[in-house]
Amino acid sequence: MKSTALNITTKTEMNRIEMIDFYNEATEDYKFWSKDYNMHFGYFVPFKTNPLKRDSMLNEMNHQILKKLELPKKEKTSLVDLGCGMGGSMRYMLKKNKRLTAFGVTLSEFQVQQGNMLLKGLNGAILKKNYNQTSFETETFDAAIAVESLCHSGHSKNSIAEAFRILKPNGTLVIADAFLKKDSKDLCHGGKYAYRKLCNHWSLEKLETIENMVAHLKAAGFNDVKVEDASFRVAPSVLHVPFAILGFAFKKLVNSKQLKRESLHNLKGSFYALLSGLHMKSFGYYIISCTK
Image (cartoon, rainbow, N blue to C red; front, top):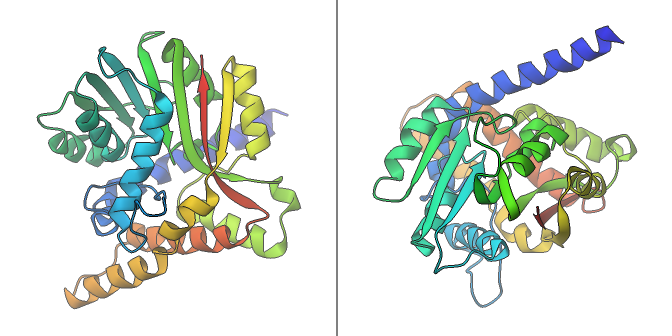
């Protein structure tokens, strides 16, 4: 039993180290994906967002998350972005709500340094912290978001418990991420292959099933758990992946630059994200909102 626990701990720690290296080295590549450094997929709204313009869909995802937070614009509120990347979602929300204060947490030193430069003039900051154990005081924030970040820790109960701890009573948590629709052992051969490769190249510990995620949130004490299946809304931005991969690789070759190991992992991970998305009976993209 001790040996099994040790193996799990070692695997988790190795994944954490790989994830930090990945984002320290590959974050700048995301400039090709989004001029605003939105390190996530987009949200398509007919007649509002242009499916050919990726950034309009990426910022619409930020808008949808902000809308679900239901933050009052006439009162001072505070937000924490759990796994904030370069702070793209934070910057969007700070510009939309002038009475908002936001803190982002990441384990990447590169994201802390460069992300804070992008936050100049806004009421926000990025800190080097683990979202599973932030050291923020209990009941600090009015709202929390986690945009395609909790997957790096396997959507663990620790992540959920920490989000619950640092939220004030009646505070809102919004999670936007990919989840499994069935247990990983029940995936078809193609689904298992895409899932394994996706986790490997993007340093994901695992993806939780959407059913288990909702159960974990309720067990942690969250109420009013609402789930939006946004798979079809996200699909148009996912379809940008192959063109982004080819464009990025071509740009590197034209500039006679060798692709870094982390960049290759990022490109391959993007491809397997597209491949996973095609298995619509096994994978889905969901936006979850809940209150403390």
